[in-house]
Length: 127
Image 1 (cartoon, rainbow, N blue to C red):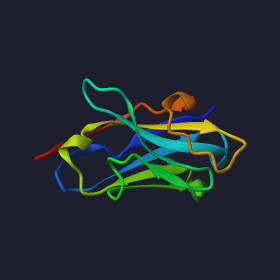
Image 2: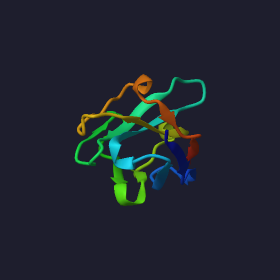
Image 3: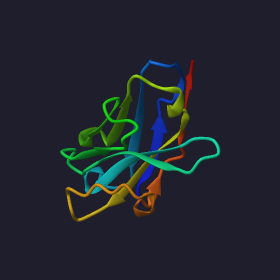
Image 4: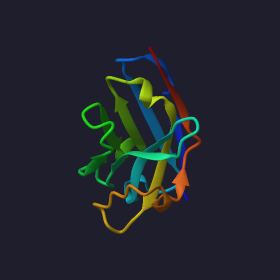
């Protein structure tokens, strides 16, 4: 059992930056693969980024490569998503998610793999 709480969302202008945080509690943070997903109004939830237990392996959706950076600080039980060069299309509710694995390098992009989710934080990008 792990609890996830996101923060850092808000309203920003196109081209601006925002950093999201996800704080985990209740279990050993380093045993979890962590990911970010987002859901825009009227659209399905989509994969954004994932980071392995150690933080040594990361993957990104093509739509955010070169603009977003995922990271984690296991000592602080926290995962981050640094979002730069934000576009109008990035407007969505962003969700932190996690799953446990005996494979330290595991990085799954399927939301069905994740069995723990945060409540979401809203990101709105204006022109």
